Image (cartoon, rainbow, N blue to C red; front, side, top):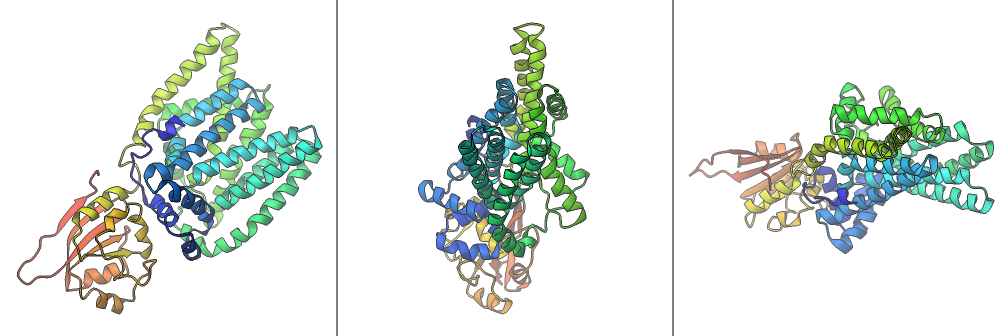
Length: 470
């Protein structure tokens, strides 16, 4: 929890977080309209975040706090899972390794549902282990019911969490009797049936993830940077400990749980992405990092056991030294992800620039229309701006070109918030001889421009600036 809260409000919101905060801060009555056009698969998370924003506001701490709490809970459950499948030492080391990985801290400080989904997948896997080991029918029924309900909620938070189901099936095939396998089939069938409506409707929005690239060697490099901070020494150390952990003949339960969980969800998504529409993206399988930590925790426990046979003191000193060295190697990455400019976009700087430069009577144009979400997380940025005149509705729909030119007639200054590519009414404004772009700023993938009406008595000089650190 400490790592999750450490400088949680340091980095600015970025584009995806801006969407979360913008949708969550609107009245719940608006949510169906928004979800008809985008992010249907995130609807349950937006409802949760709406409750949080209603109580605590939309500041970075409040909006990111659910992810930090989820990460802490997920770590605690992983410790319990390690204890159950191997030993107390395995659980302790697995939790320490998991919490220290840069990717875990990164998503513990983000107003998106990936940390929550990871915590729930860890919990579901733990429930599966408990259910298959229960020795009383009544207790077993409660655990299988909890497994089914929790996995259904997880899938409604993110559909791709269902890729853990095949991994769970393989776990059961490797160890448990036919009775447990049949009960899992019933649970899996119920989960899929309860999730099917979301999956069927979400297919209509599949184009929203068309930006996902097909996996290649660059994807592997990105994974190394994301999970381990890009440090080769960290990669080698964690992977060596993981191999040592799953290779231990006296701890087959760790291998049976960790290997399918680590390989199958990501592997299936990669295969699908190679032969069809790409769906694999590292954050979608963030929960697989817990499987890696579980295996590495077992490896660290194995090192401690080896040291104990030679010296009682070494049983504590050797793994402690190993973890201290690992923490030192990971430390720079932990610091880097908390820097103000560590996210793909700097919506805070964009908002401050807009707020400081706005004058009464200025209007703002969002292109595409959904870019209103880029400023709403910092609402004072548009407090003095006309946000309605250049849009079709209260969701900032785009005006037809002729209506847009007419709406711009009475304006003297227009601010444009757009993505990396300019199109639609942003192009109309750029080609409008009545206006001239006098300033432009770049904030990652979000661009801010100022257009002013031409004045025959002066020719304003164009200004180009980069993202300030605000």
